[in-house]
Amino acid sequence: MRKKLADFAPIEILGAEDAFKVLQPYAMLPAIHVVVGCVDGRSQLFSLEIVHIGSEEEYVFSPALIYAHVTERRAFGFFVGISHPSGSPVATPSDIFNARRLKEQSDFVGAPLMDVITFGVDEFVSLKENEFA
Image 1 (cartoon, rainbow, N blue to C red):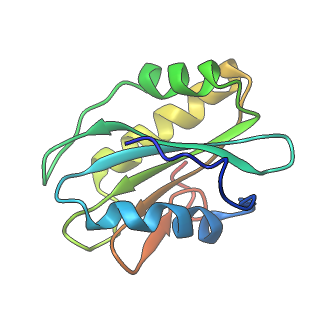
Image 2: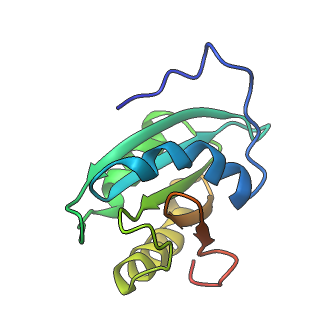
């Protein structure tokens, strides 16, 4: 599902709370969704897309999938949201593993990973703030 952002007022992403506001609608979906948000040099969101859909309990994706998306859009920076259909935003071992892989490899892409956010309907966890990413 591609969101068209051109018709909306600019959305500035300065931290996890800002990212959660744009990710929150994906929490209602019945499976785990991995969503990537791309920002420009002024921290304005210009792309928000689902890049992977898992099952209700697990997902497997390659960081290359995320980086292909980010480099194709020539993003200045990016964040990743992982929905938790259970409603609990607590990061799973898989979330932590993937966040660390993304962080380790982001220097090679030229666009910094701003955060990895796990989220339910009303709550989120910033893996960056919890030093997982």
